[in-house]
Length: 418
Ligand code: GLU
Image (cartoon, rainbow, N blue to C red; front, side, top):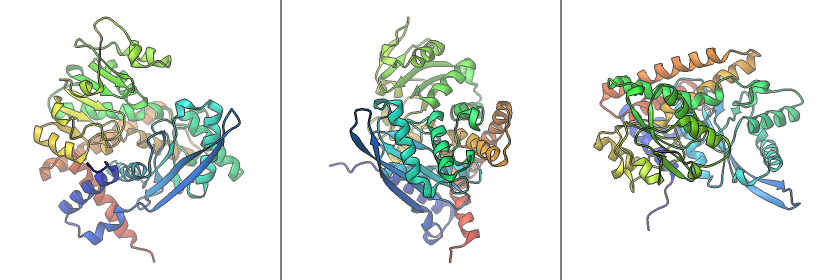
């Protein structure tokens, strides 16, 4: 029997490899292999029919060496402890690679939010917030949106925390609605960062977004925003997919029409237009396009389908979409992979701006947020590109060389207490 895939093992293998190249002795980086703190909670919710359901939830802080823990909260039926651990560790390295002063954390609740009424979702969120309250806070651990959560839910977290503290604490969570201290542009920031990074990797190969063709897996906040921004820059997007399947048009999809369809709460399976063919998720990943953007969940490009990949570039909008085995295979195939911790860091970068503004009671414009985001994404991309070329390693290994070094050196400078 094949051992169950454990995304946290994926993280450890990548970290070990980077630490070895950096010349660290095992003892020097041992501590960063373990999450600092893990909280598991059982969340009772009174459902609208009067019954009580108990949901399993987590908040895991991987590291606080470089600053308060930071990372989203995921609502998905497939959430489990090892996934949340991996997602928390990726946050540590993501914040390190873009050099913002945070550690990493992640939260998750095992729930299909689509199956809950808005009131049930609010009760679940408030109770979960109350249960993780002892370990979160603007100077401790700052949640944000992730798969299955959104600004409205962040607003409920902010309100619950504030009510329990007895005063307004906007800096406890990022990705809030702009009316209560959310940063304008935060919602689009991950997708925007993916597009900035795509432009950067193409430019290094003498190409432009407008000359390239694309396939995008996932039309949620990240994939949907990336599709819209790429479309605005005259990219030809040949295929996009969601949970229901994928659509393909060799001449390029009408992204505006697709976004309008999805905006009505419909899925791609019911999208029909001239020249559009319905294909499977597997066929989407195997499309012969210049750039593939996986923007859904982990483990999508794995040993079973890596041989089908035909694209030249993969820009990882999702966290952990490529397994270690598939990554090694892609490198042999000459596919250039821009890793998740760099490519999708735009969200947490603008979360950082939001938090900075909240704790100073300031507010910047969307243009300010976008300009500073662009600056950080460009600088981080160039840092990763340069070290990868200097050391002759993949962009993923290059990103981890920078990130692991920053985390280990922070730990060394602090020393081990007591
Ligand atoms: N959930 C997002 C991520 O995976 C954003 C986290 C944040 O803004 O704190 O990067």
